[in-house]
Image (cartoon, rainbow, N blue to C red):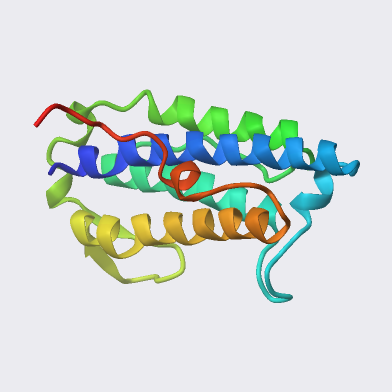
Length: 170
């Protein structure tokens, strides 16, 4: 599997799922007569990021991983979102950015070395970066967003998390 196949389609799919979870959260808030932004401040533990930040970081993880793998510049998002609508726009912006990539952008990426701002002087192969940091970091924040919503009563299940599957006749 190429680095493109292992990253862009999955990031895109899961960010779209995240958008649907956020919509479910807003619907839940409406049914329970509270503002959906209340959910954005929710967290599972006092020392963890709230839902708002989990979504921002999941978006950043997807866009920065693909940018680093291809040597491109990722769009900047100043983390100013305060509403569900603003977060939806951020998710859509990142999905739109991911949709600009093609497999061709990733040609030769396997030979690229990736450095990270928090580890000056250290590098890793692009494949190791994707498998050991990019994907796990993305799923960490995505899972926490899902868990925060579930913890707050939003009716989400495993199929909401996994989303559509590429079935074919066997």
